[in-house]
Image 1 (cartoon, rainbow, N blue to C red):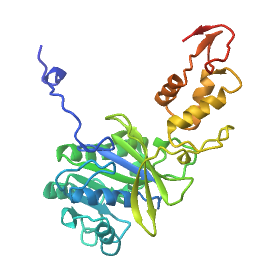
Image 2 (cartoon, rainbow, N blue to C red):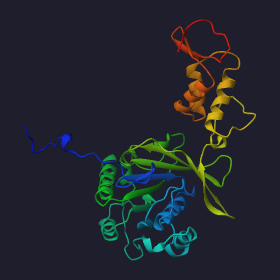
Image 3 (cartoon, helix red, strand yellow):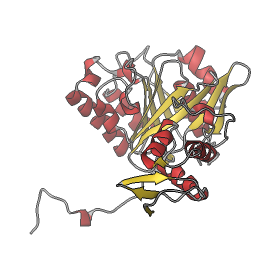
Image 4 (cartoon, rainbow, N blue to C red):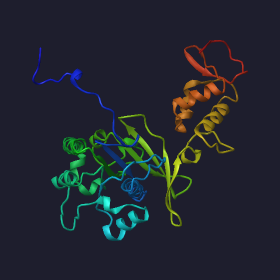
Length: 332
């Protein structure tokens, strides 16, 4: 039986995700980049734009390929005295970077047809709106679920139809203690529409260092945390993956005499300290790992490396170091 309304998935041709910067920014999708004002979001994005404009490389050193066109729409900085000098300093090919002059075309909003027209005319690979809060007609547009959903659906259609990545830069709200995904301004529908959500935070150890975390990825596994620095003497520089212990803020009673260099080393030290006086419930080990933002994969790899074989007693699993005695129970 055929239907005029329905489409069979057997008639759909599966296609891989096309990445601009895998796994952080996908072509044809919306990416949300958020953080506190002044945390370096725009500087980071301008350096990515510069590399893309000249056919450079990602922060990990993977080539972008041929130079690409970009639309960078920013309302908070002047085009002449701030944005252009920063792009030049980053080595951008400014012939491949365009914007709508808001001194001429005022009242620009996020879903403005003029942005769509500019995308059609310029055919960019990347469109950046910075910040999203400056391009909404009314503050309530992002707060009301219905309006936010409609707005994001429209932008998502532009990204898909015109085969470009759209990055929306947004400021954090002032709500303290909320989960990463809920810290941006507006309805959760804004986050729901984004396929990737990146978050920029200042390091607790060095105020010139920033950490980039991917707190959502609907298309792939989350990417590694990355670091960059912005120093008066040397300017912007990528520092690589954020694997160092000083980038975490534990509130555990365990005290470290030394600073391990990787999450594996940290996990090993924490586990050995926790088990130093005998068996400990596996849930307590997991709690300690979560305190230091160490995932189950790393925890289990370290468990194997240390030769730990959990055992079960009275419906509760325990961990114990090799060579330590435990009082009965079945081993895992």
